[in-house]
Image (cartoon, rainbow, N blue to C red; front, side):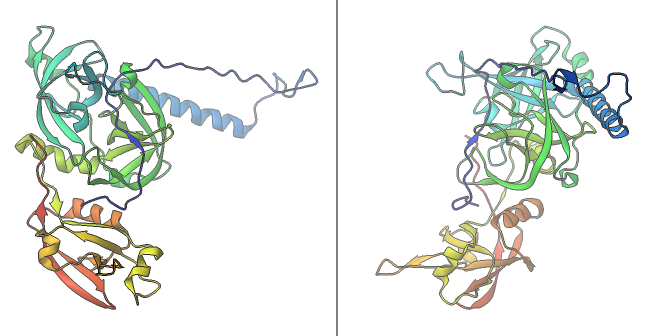
Length: 393
């Protein structure tokens, strides 16, 4: 599913340590009027103020508890970079990222862009223990990768060390709501064991993956600070459960993006079993219908809603089923293609909805029913889904 025509985000996918953080501490002085304190030190605080302080204390204690429970399960990932490679994503021949323990036998979940094309990487725990891990499986389309610890750099017995691992629990990202408090833990700028907090800013974002041409659906947007080195680290709810993997942020700060745990739950078992994951593939490029695009449709109803089909991949599943894209006549005039108005008999109005539905409910080889608007008529197309091409070398 191409992402041409989709809103463009200026994203930074994080995987290295480059900068020194400067921490500013702001001290707020008591309010005064003409040199006299406006509040009496001996007077009891109002009930509302007492309740607010109690809530703040409870939140602080909860955050402390979460950090103590999970800090030993979040690792720093280091991979070697060829010396001739020079970019803002590398330093001293290494690239850095984060990851977290997913089971007792040493599997670690992280981002695909953190491991790159590496076959082996180093993982370091907050206690300083360092291991070698192989790259078990990768999925560039969802930016998820799985590692497996195979060797202890400190010459301790690997089996004994693995038994001490505390896997993090994957939560249900469908239960997440805007406004929920969240915690991000990782290694920004190589500063190990860093915790930041924030809230869920929005849900269901469609964000371009680091692999050009496709997007990741149902992304969790948060204002918790994430920086280079946070990629692959967990985004946690207030129960300490993983609801996402931090993988990118809007350049300039303030907005971070996390891959939802439900997609992780679907992809990771296949990466462990087969080394890759096959996403369902329709084979067309489209975008949510706008009034400008509707003007190319001639006599289309003013209230028509759906997904505008721009180009169709020749020989692809959608093409074989008869879906049509835009055409250009002999005079250079562009004529609109089909508009998808329903998927499996359910109305759909946005490209995000279609991609999310496909990822959640369909696999290569399944059939999806597309209802399309064309030249004032509707038609039903049965599309047998293909699978996206593997990007693994």
